[in-house]
Structures are given as C-alpha cells and as structure tokens.
Amino acid sequence: MLNDDTITALATPFGYGSISVIRISGNQSISIVSKIFFSIQKNKKLEDQPTHTIHLGYIQDFLDKVLVSVFRNPLSYTGENMVEISCHGSYYIQQNILQLLIRNGVRLARAGEFTFRAFLNKKIDLSQAEAISDLISSDNKVYHDISLQHVKGSLSNMIKKLRQDLLDFSSMLELDLDFHEEKVSISDRMELCNFLQKLIKIIKNLVESFSLGNAIKTGIIVAIIGETNVGKSTLFNQIIQEDRSIISPIGGTTRDIIEESMILKGIPIRFLDTAGMRKNVHDPIEYMGIKNTMKKIENSQLILYVFDSSFNEKKQKEMIHIIQNIYKKNSQKIIFAIANKSDICHFHDYIDIKSKVDGLFHISAKNGEGIEEMLNYLSCVFMKKLKKRKYIVLQSRHYESFKNSLNEIQFAYDSLKRGISEELILIHIKCASNHLGEIIGEITSEDILNNIFSKFCIGK
Image 1 (cartoon, rainbow, N blue to C red):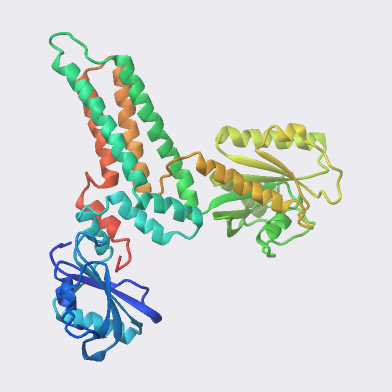
Image 2: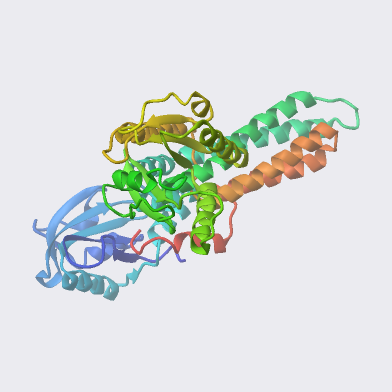
C-alpha cells in the first residue's frame, strides 16, 4: 500500500439513502477537491480554510449541492489532509463525484486503507485499528463498550506497560551480567522471581479472558438441559416468547438442538433447547441428540439444569452426580438449577442441590412464573463476571500473542528458579516482549498487516 498518493471511497453504505459521504485522504486532497467544489460564498477558496471546518457549495457542473468538511494533518483520522463530501444519497451522484475525483488524480481506496494510513502515521496502533473493526461490528452494548475502550487505547497502554516492565527486568539481569566476573550479584533472585510471577498472573488473566471475549462477540451460550419431560422446551419457548420447540408429553420429542439468540440487558445470549437426557435409549436418532447435548454442555458458558419439582431423593442424587461431573470438566462453568412445575408441586428447599450450583430458581415454565427473576439474575451474574476483568481480549490474534508471551515468561521464571544463566533468561524475556509488540504493531510483518486491513470495509 502506498502512502503518498490521494485515495477516495464511499464512507457510507453502498446504495440509495438520504445522505452519502465520500472520503478523500492524501496530502493533495484539499487542493484536488477545490478543483471540483465551488463555495456559495464568492472568492472563498477551500485551500485557505482551517482544519475542522464545513463549507456549503456545489460540485462541478451543478451536479449536487454539498457540504465539504476539511481536516488538515496531523489532526485528521489518517494523519494526512482529508476531505469529506456530504452529498445526496443518489447512486448517480455518488458515482459521478467519484469519477470527477479519479479524473483529477485520485485513486479508489483499498479495503481498510484509511485506517492503515492512520496506523502508518502513528495516529493509532495495530490493536486500536482492530478495535475500530470490532466497534463497527459490535451488535450489543457489552461488545460496543469493550471495543470502544480498546479504541481509546486501554489495551495498548497496558501492553506498553508490560513491555516496559519486561525491559526493566532485563536491565536488572544485565546488571548482574556486567558484574558476573566480579562474582557480585546486584539483583535479588527471589525479588526477580516475584516480579515475573506478577507479570505471569496479569498475562494469564488476559489469556483466560479470551473465551469470555469470544462469547461476547458471538453470543454467550446458555444450554437448557435436563431429563425428558421436565419442561425444557416450554421454558425455552417462554424465554424467547415464541413457540420454536415442540411440546409433547411423549419423552424424547426434542432431538435436534434448537437455538435462538437474544440481547438480555445488553448481553448477547444464545439459548439452546437440548434433547432430554435419559438412560437406556434404544432410538438411534434420540441417542445422537443426547450425544449432541453433551457436546453443547462442554461448549456452553452457562447451564440451566431443569428438573421436575416432584423429583424424589434418588433423582436428586443422580442430578447432583451429573452436576459434579460437569464442574470436574470445567470449574468455570456456571450452573443454575431450575425447579420447574411450581404451579402444581409443593415448594422444597433442595438444600443439597442448592449447595452444588450457582443459583436455584423455582419456576413454572407453563405460566411463566419466576422466569423473569431467573433471567435478571443470569444477566447480573455475567455483568459481575465482566466487571471482575479489567481487560477482555476480543481478537484471536491477540490471544495467540498473549499465550506465546506467557509461555516465554514462564520459561524465564522456571529458568530463574533453577539458577540457569542470565543469557538464556534474557532471550526468553526478549521473545515475550516481541510477542506483546506484535499486538500493537511495533513488531509485525507485511502479511499480518495485509490480513488485518483487508478485513475492513472500503472507506474505513
């Protein structure tokens, strides 16, 4: 990608609309636009206007009455001179303005080229560029808020601080190397180990946050599970306010997993109605449905374990055993026990079950009683989980870099504990810093840059 020519693209969605915005960037952008724009104020030259000003006028041959916004370097989005032409949203007008610009030496921008120029001109770093892409893609409040924080530089600043900490650590080790022949130790190895332990804890939290970040982008999976005929499908239909799942007194009616997405208090949720779990299944199709249910349990962030309020003690023990097995596989899993059919059964405390789960709710899936309370608590649990984490990783590229950096620091820590030479430890620390540098673009390759910016829309 060149950075010395002038580029243009439609910044608003393609097609018809009330207003369209055409964006131009490059050192010659203001002088080029001045050739096709004529202000309603006589003798007013666009090239003489200060930055962040808007001007009313006409495009050449009275093609359209437009507003032209001027942004001068380095105060523009790209860090170059920029102009934005706000015209009427006619396809004919859009294309003719673009053709006028091209005839005057402007070329059409490639995908993400405006943001790429902002990166080259150090207006933003690479993680902020990706955060802009996330912000554009955000379809819920939580995703939007995290993306916006990353655009503002919260993640970048934290990474810069980590790299500075690693540099400080390296400086202390290098001091020891300088005085190695005199057999003088400047640094305390225990203090150095403690220093690395703190960094390991921070980066480990970042690595672990990615599963939550990915769920925020794609939807937090909530699996509704339980035995046959306990009211899972009725509960699913009540939650989504639609009859998606077939309800029948015949056990094993639900065989395919049915999914529905919704936004719950700004949180994206994917509710799954699953096949009822029971022993001695002879129908091969129902058996496959139960196998799929077990897979979905593994992939879900939260489980609603529905059971019949009239369950006897034996059934409760079986349920507790299943819950314990789920926690064994993933201690981070959130499980709610849902005592259904409260409209026809006597109230029980279910103390044994309650002590094993993150929440117990008495509901009637049939008439909707208790469901709103359950959903409110569900959203509160996730909001608390989000607030516990200062930073949440959204990009898989960042996740891989943090993971690689963590491995290198762990190697350095283990080497330090074993008394291995400072030279080897310094190599691991440098690699760890480089992996962090990849995230913000201080260390990167052209292939990575092309891959990131090619995913942007034209005009951004």
